[in-house]
Amino acid sequence: MAAKPKLCYFRGRGRMESIRWLLAAAGVEFEEEFIETREQYEKLQKDGRLLFGQVPLVEMDGMVLTQTKAILSYLAAKYDLYGKDLKERVRVDMYADGTLDLMMMIALAAFKTPGEKEENLALVVKKAKTCYFPAFEKILKDHGEDFLVGNKFSWADVQLLEAILMVEELDASVLSDFPLLKAFKTRISSIPTIKKFLQPGSQRKLPPDSHYVKTVRKVLQL
Amino acid sequence: MCAFPGVENPGDSIMAAKPKLYYFDGRGRMEPIRWLLAAAGVEFEEEFLETSKDLEKLRNDGSLMFQQVPMVEIDGMKLVQCRAILNYIAAKYNLYGKDTKERALIDMYIEGVADLNEMYLFWSISPPNEQAAKMTQMKDKIANCYLPAFEKVLKSHGQDYVVGNRLSRADIHLVELLYTVDELDPSLLANFPLLKALKTRISNLPTVKKFLQPGSPRKPPLDEKNLAKVKEIFQLK
Image 1 (cartoon, rainbow over the protein chains, first blue to last red):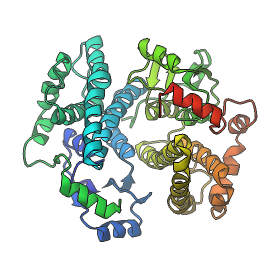
Image 2: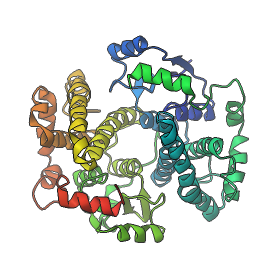
Image 3: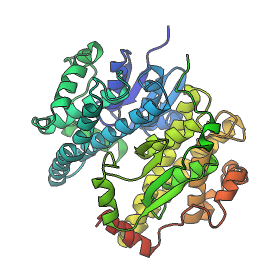
Image 4: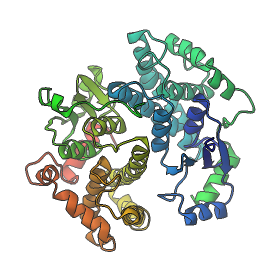
């Protein structure tokens, strides 16, 4: 019996959330160690587990992995969520990275001054409505299939759902002009592993609040 | 079960059209793609954006999925997102390790390189009064975080290549970075003998050697004239 993957990060979304989503979507149980103090962080660095001195950190299959995209790619390949060949894989990567760009803007906005934060989040909603969501609506329209790539559930679908939900937290009406994305959201949310993850009490984390921002600033000495 | 999608027979590419790169005539986010194609021995064409109108035209054509460049036309696809493009090229030309675990290691290393490339990119387009501080920060990370990490990797296995005892994209991306570091400050490499040896070794590979020669598609650092052009194209302040 393999050990469960072990995640090490702050108790919040940040750069780890997409990893939690993907593991959950794949039906993989995982453990979490939460960083709360500077001392904990310095110990991690001294232990040599953080290749570039940074988290996220995921320990699984005998490996000590850092770098969010490296971890996500590994999980996608391991759990067969990466398309069936190279051409499908590149599409999964393209779509996933697009959504990650959008979600990173949201994650970083939490650390700006109040005025800047509002401005940045408004920009995120604008980009979602004018650039990202139209692109994904078109993909779904062009092939008429249930999933983004290869008529099969993949990492790209998980990322897109995660992004949709995050942007909806900023503006509940953001999908109003995107009927296929609305249907996609419902469909992917109903997948049993995802449905479970969306329920209260799962390992899904809340949007960043002032406590989270304060903790991260303190630990990373920002 | 195959751990990841099949790799195309490199022989197939002889008949195919050359990949075409769409970007401005400078390094930016396209340079790692140029390095990787060159290292794989793949000839490519480039279409350079000269003005913001060129970028607008590409956007209006529907060629850019997220309205951004780099974009690479290859094998009948219009690819965007650097990591996606690089992953595709690496897998196609067998420069991505032998299995998912080697791939994970390669990815971890190259994402670190990519982070440093981002710092370099932002430094190169930042206003003069901010550059000094950004340079200090960058040099600190290079000297105390990234170079030691990679030197340690090489020391840990004592092999000629970063991963799996054979050439992979990790070697190419890392050596590209080492050239950039050398341009910024040659003394930064002084305490890293294994990295210096890797740089020499990889530079001597025929395809890389060719790319390092004048007249290749390799681009120089951003000068003032091109900085102005970049700011206009991307409408940066």
